[in-house]
Amino acid sequence: QVQLVESGGGLVHPGGSLRLSCAAHGIIFSIDDMAWYRQAPGNERELVARITSGGSTNYADSVKGRFTISRDDALKTVSLQMNTLKPEDTAVYYCYAEVRSYYGIRAYWGQGTQITVSS
Picture 1 (cartoon, rainbow, N blue to C red):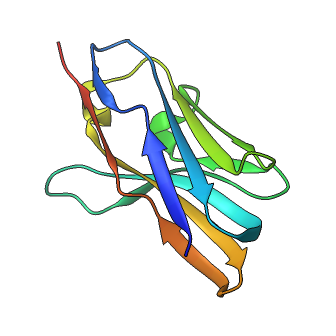
Picture 2 (cartoon, rainbow, N blue to C red):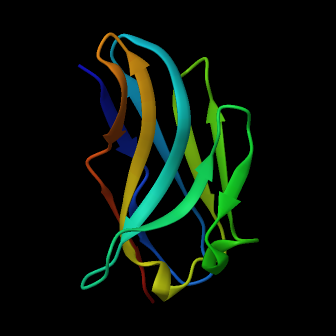
Picture 3 (cartoon, rainbow, N blue to C red):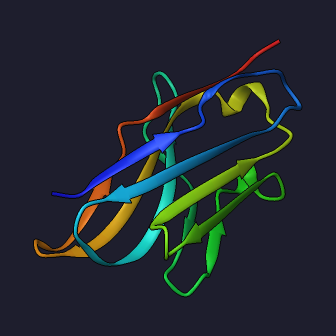
């Protein structure tokens, strides 16, 4: 089975920075798109940033210029560097990956990690 394990969440002051990481575990042939989503209380889950296997990226307008997504295919990880954090960035952040394995190509989600931006 494939699992995505996230790390790096926590509490940060407005204007601060955090880095999220997500590692894919299991027998994995390759990974297509990887992404970070977030969900704030009362809101739907939304895309924060996405990166293709070729390295192309796209970001939600609300995080452009502040967040950077990157991946390391050798380590099977995806990271999200978050700078100039705002209270409205408070949410549970979820890692997402489209994984090719013995089970075919499937989408997997991490367990979620809480980010709280507050003074």
